[in-house]
Image (cartoon, rainbow, N blue to C red):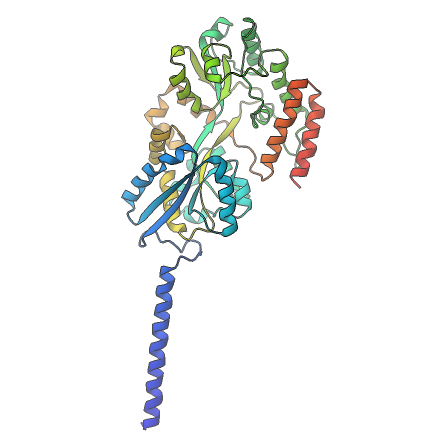
Length: 426
């Protein structure tokens, strides 16, 4: 081999070494940089990761207690919780989407899911179900699963749930001739009128006219369809009109006050409003603020028409689409989905588990109040998972105020609501 050839070979060795070093550097850089490739970044098992979790409302302030337990089991994953007021969380999320920088995990109110899923902000959880069986949708109440699904995409895993039931004064209902809670619409109306007949300043039932879901919930109980087969709003059909007329009848016959100006707890305690429909958070409020009527009140599933379907609400957890730590985020979300974790969360915050297995726990199974909630959850459905729903429900409140204050033609008012809904959905 001559000198020239040896020089060429040496040069090739040098170039090969440079190429190898460059490739190694590139691979190392790749390991240290969290790209957004789904399922490949933020490896929870090997890499030290700090997850940003956005929680909403007062309950989020308790989230670090659960996060500490998660980190104790997963020392490579640190959780930083940011507690946001509900009224600020929405805007902050919009900013996060615009900048493509935000949390890794975010708490989603069920009514927010369609908007943020439609914006592409919520990652698909389906790729993580095999690795984390806790995420399987079969583990949760059907209504909660429905709330976390957008256009057949699993975008949010149920965390905690709530539904609406009937609260009633057992002593006053008994005096009115009812040994148990009203079982159907006819009995509910009859009991309310008999309770209102006790005298001036006494009513049968509290119905909050600003409750956006109430009319839709009663319409469902009456068998009303909300949309035509081709997806158009149908809020003025006969079944829907009949349901709203039924609600309006409580105001018109005097069994529900229009402007009482009293909080429900003292009014319930004093027997001014002996029945109302609300969620599980009222249990502790009554126990704390109206201890004098302990043993004189109870709860029941909603009275039935064609069915007794209630509203399902609560919160879910989603992985932010722009998270650079999706694998670790999935591990945290899976941890929060376990029945035992949700029971611990209930212990901290009184929020009720979305995992059905948790409801076999003695603390829920043998509690007279939670048993009612658990039964109602089997007949509870969320509001439609569509982006226009917020506008539609706000429009309903506006039109219902015209109805109950002025006792106008219900069908005409609902036709006006329907026309607006058509515009919202375009």
